Structure formats: structure tokens, C-alpha cells
Image 1 (cartoon, rainbow, N blue to C red):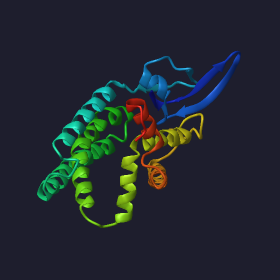
Image 2 (cartoon, rainbow, N blue to C red):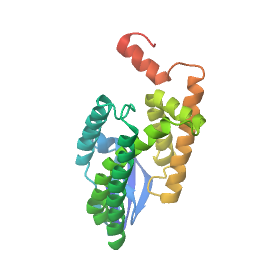
Image 3 (cartoon, rainbow, N blue to C red):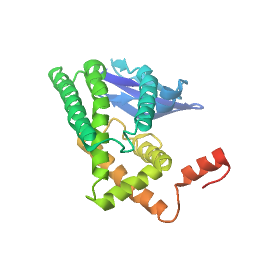
Length: 241
């Protein structure tokens, strides 16, 4: 995965004796092959500079450690009853105010430093990114407190039920999200990766959320679990329910 600091390049796929230009990258663009990036295999795409170009390679080392740490933290929160709502109201209020305060302060400072750097790509992808990286943990704790307290109320009960449906079909929803987003951003779909600004990306997020909320509720109206949950249970236990 590369971030184009300056210049221009193209991503090329060679099939037999023919060259196919998949996309072009300009200043500020990100060029990647997600499968090879995460699997550590050679990409089928070649990158060719079409004028003097300066690129920055985005390392992937952080992803494995971060994902593993978050999984362990999630298991700890589950076993201690935090995510299952077994703690007091005061506990979750503290999660919201302390976690949210720390998270917003860290991410806000990171945003300020990135702005002061003129959104320099090397700074944003390194030090600027680190503040958001650290802020994500206290923000997760704040969101847990907020969601648990919301779940104890009957406010917007219909929306709560739809969120619960997504939770009960989490595996199916996860794969559906991947399918939808690869169709939007990857070359086999619309190929919009690196072309959308933040407001447009927020609309994509909102659209995917709406689809998941509607889709999961529709599935559970006629089934006890999602299709992939059913398949996984059958492979594990030899039965679907």
C-alpha cells in the first residue's frame, strides 16, 4: 500500500501481451492491492510512474498486534461483565465521561497537529495517526457505556431492536459489509478508493448502516439466526440450532 506524496503513477495489470490500466494515482491518492497487503503475497498489479513521483509505503505491522490486542480486550470486557451490562449505572457513566474525555482530547490534538502540518502525508500517516490510534481505546470504552445505558432505556426501542438483530447476525453482517464496500471501492466494482472526501464517505457509512439494520431484521423475521451463523454452527456442532 502506497501513499502518493507527489507526482503521478498508474496501476497496471498485465494479461498475456496486453496491458490494462486499472487506475491512476495522483498527489494524495492511495494505491493498494488489499489482498496482497494483508496476505503478504505478490500483487498482480504493477505500479509505473508516469512522471517524477515520490511515494510513501504504509507499513502493515500494526494491524496484527492491534487486532490481537483488541480481541483480548474484548474477551476481558465480556468475562468481567462490562459489555453484558452487569456493572452499575455509575460505572457506565464514568466510562462515558472519562473515556470520552480522554479519547476526544487525544484525537482532537492529533487533528490539530495534522492541520498545523498542512496535512503533510508523512506526518498524518505516522505521528498524526498515532493520536487517533491511542484515542480509539478510550473512545470504545465510552461507546460501551453509552450503548449499555441506552439499552436499559426504552428510548427508540425499534432502532434498538434493529441493532440487536445486527448483533445476532454479526458474521453475516460483517461479510455483507465487506461485499458492499469492495463493490464500492475496489476495481471489480466502482473503484472509488481514494476518490471520495470525508462527507461522501460518511454517506457511504450511513448507507451501509441502513442496509445492515434492514437486512438483519428481515433475516430474523423468518429465521432464528443468519445464514452464515447457521453454516458456522453446523460446521462446528453438526447442527444449525
